[in-house]
Image 1: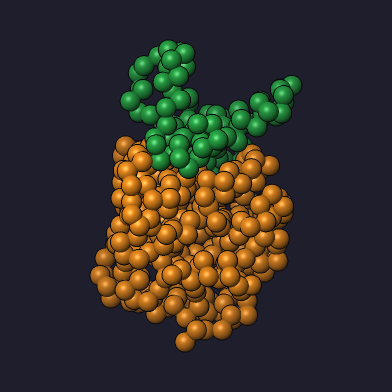
Image 2: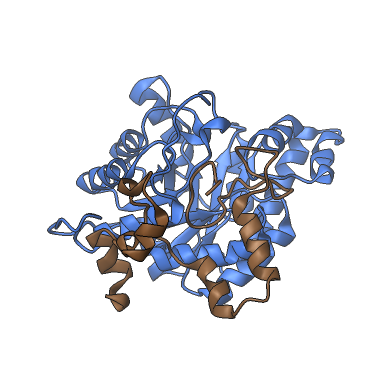
Length: 298
Length: 92
């Protein structure tokens, strides 16, 4: 049973998902602390897979911990660190633990992280990884070896509407849909026009493919500069950075920016919800949810 | 194949604003280059559409062997059984 699937396929409601913070230390107490903050506001949370090419507690282990604490996980699986055997093992491990939401993505290169000397894998790429998850749901491994009963995955992919070639991003999303993705979580996009073109194109090309854009909550322009300089595929217009930097209250300006982005994203065709990455980790997450009309679940 | 990430299904999400590679900033993304060329060249639409084909995982057993011989013998068309059943039913 997947709440994500239930909301997207069998309701008109919006889906709100959040990036679960990466876990390095602090054990289950740390998990419980993060859960307490996010659980009232979100339908599900992404368990990341060595996000930004930095090693952390593994994707599946955090997803299981989230599930134990009552939060529905969306298990991210990235192609950078695992070959096709390891990726299928992650997927079958998820099925073993009753985790059905899986997000299949290519992933940043190792050079984006703190161990650039590592061997990059990319035995599969993003669209192939989506396809492999789909193959498992037909009751067989990639090799053809049978799985009975077949695992039931609700598969998603990620696309970046803000990276060149812009027109092609729509076709690429449709390709991932053909491979088996039922919805897309988008990379953060600071160009509203690009996001709008992408959503319009995807909703025309594949009306059944749900779109969940991503917004990032930051405290000041330093975080925007960092993303602009260091995160592959993210471009932030100078005017956007200046708007925060030159404000008398940068923290409030950064909040207003994310509120504006959220409202804009939710108004676009094909968009069925929002994915939130919270680097502020203060009370503005609750403020954003309330100002978007959300009421806490408990 | 000059993509440092050895991707087979088009440009990743890490393409820079100027169309260059995430891993090698001085190099144009090979998939961006291929995209621009297929748009510009006077090709039949069916050829252009091949850019969007879902290409299967690479058979690593063929590393270091002749791609020409593999093309002629059709060895390079062999797919994992699971892939074939899900994505290439119509062709087999």
